[in-house]
Length: 394
Image (cartoon, rainbow, N blue to C red; front, side):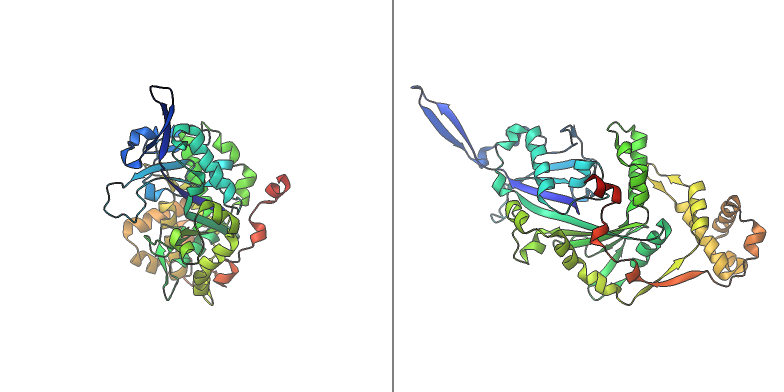
């Protein structure tokens, strides 16, 4: 599915018709060099919701995530630059078409055209005076994020899979560690492509918590039904972010009209992620089977940050102490863990039904775990990218 689009259009010359003293129409060309930014009748940077309401953009332009619920836009003006080869005066729009059009991006379509033209129409309908400076045939695709998902049995397994991927490397393919539940491949400033793998439901639940606190004026919580959230359990997203140079190197035009004619989301995604899957061949991961204890800790000890994000740092820390006790025994785990951290974890585990006596009697004979090939968890079934209820509705 298409999870993010960045589109660009140069700001063109405009022609005005006036009348001379004898009433004869005179066509006057307004050169771009003399256009003032105020002539565009739009803010230089802002966002629009699906209804065309103007909002401030809560992120730096370069850091707007595919989870962003609105469409951001920004005017770039480099007309004073000495570099005459660069594009010097243009507007970019950026959004997740799926989230903009249907309210969520848990699933969506592979075609690039419907989302792109929805975004363009939203911009032009909101700012009709701007539309006079934009010509449809000049829109280009500067970035497209293509994402598909694989499945794990539980959220715990999904989290362990993604965290295990942080240790993967093979030649030029090296993982960059993200926060828990997220891993990146490729340079952060790459102008060709970037790959991100993450546990989707964690992102969704944090987003819904933020919406709930803000009052849910747009009815977002109604969109994320119980059946939709249940379907997303265990979902691991594999997101390929392709830039202009990726298409240029393959002789593919990034002109929107031309790209719509040849765009093949699945083929582009397979090619761009091929090196990652090669790096995973023959490698294995350990899956620890203690989901019930971890779930109890997370249910009892969530943490809400100043920004409103729900994290489970304390719960995960206590769970790590439990695994250390189970693996190495009480005495060794206590020796290797800071005293305050150790006893706080013991108290938290006690609240989950594990007494000190039970913990002290764990034999330290290793954790029950399965050694599983990565490939078992990364099979992408392109026929299972939509839930059954969505297929029936279609």
